[in-house]
Image 1 (tube, one colour):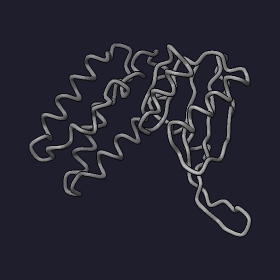
Image 2 (spheres, rainbow, N blue to C red; image 1 turned 45 degrees about the horizontal axis):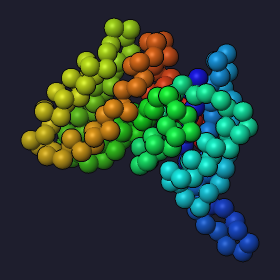
Image 3 (tube, rainbow, N blue to C red; image 1 turned 45 degrees about the vertical axis):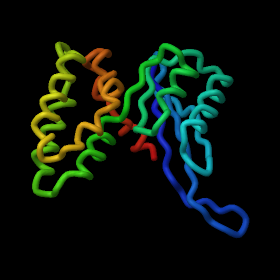
Length: 185
């Protein structure tokens, strides 16, 4: 049903030298709600092409269909998801997005901006809609645009920030972030 993707950088020994390389992790949530580690692969860096190779490998090993892929904001990753799993929804990790936004906010405003962002992404009730979430995001941008003129640039990929709302309310907290995979790391 769901595939979570993330990479972490680790120091790896290659002969007599050490270098930081990307360890790509993919785990899935099966139809019976059991989790399964699908892949752990090392690549020199994290990029969309590497993810495409990993997706091809798990397809060859038997993953036929994926409903949703949850990952961070790596450029081009959603294209790889759609190439290898046509029809799958893509969800950017909301926690990563919030962190990226807050990194550009002055310390005195962080608490209020964080509270406002939490409101934007708090769409866990069964009556929440993608349209309502989009309206909350527009209100957030309007509120902070004068103080942070480029804040809207963080939300150009808003299409992939609210995919979780298309799923039943009882699973939304599980699928709007890669936190479960971060815990595995």
